[in-house]
Image (cartoon, rainbow, N blue to C red; front, side):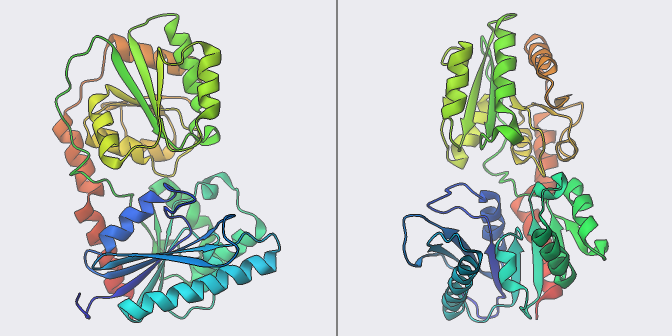
Length: 376
């Protein structure tokens, strides 16, 4: 490992860990690509009801070390803050022991770990993904911290133009906000020629959060569609709790005949499912990026999705069918329309567009330009 490499601290409020195995996996991809040209230490602090004292796990590759600190759950706000602060100090000590002094703090999602670095003198880069900025869900303390850290930051990264517009409300210098999307591994998500099938195969992939993804709305549309045609199936792949989804599908009489459920899948398996499916279905009420839509298009798979700002940065009338949020009848009609006349994509062109915007090489180059500009 070269001593000349910058040491970037990825301070990540969201990151995959044993309590939340898929939380912030898109941040993990950014950390991995940042480590191609830097030494990167990831620090994530996770409250865990199974521990009664601080527990630290460290995983290392050549240029990337992931430090997850599990802390006891505290209800008292002061004790909670002190617990986080102690965990952060221990983690940064471990980080610098192996990789040397930190050059830049790259904060990924402000809450709660942003509270720990308010007095730091190191250059600060912030990447934000949180849909709460677009839904006005920040409380007064979060708004105060956001304005303070946005003023302090050398660069603010939003994962979409839509999110950038909403982050700008908290910054006196909106010019410092740059858009860098989530990473799509185009070596895994690539198109194949689709085989002819007797039935159209739809797929939905998400965390299963109904408030955001409106999974119940999709199930209702599927039920309506079964009264018109039987020539399809819908597979749900979710990394969240699917109990309520299963119950709803059983209640509607579509469980394991028109609707099928798969639990959390590896990235390679997600790619294969997208390659083999005829269309991705997303009925989201809101998104800040829409990573699954980008992955689908990289696989040459058309998208049926809601007409919301972040999604529209990825899809268009040539590769998708756009529908209104919460309009179940319109979703039913879109599914039927696709069954009767599937969208045929220029699969290589769609893959190339995603690669030119979100591949490892592109994201790495953009991050490195920022690190080179603002490091000590």
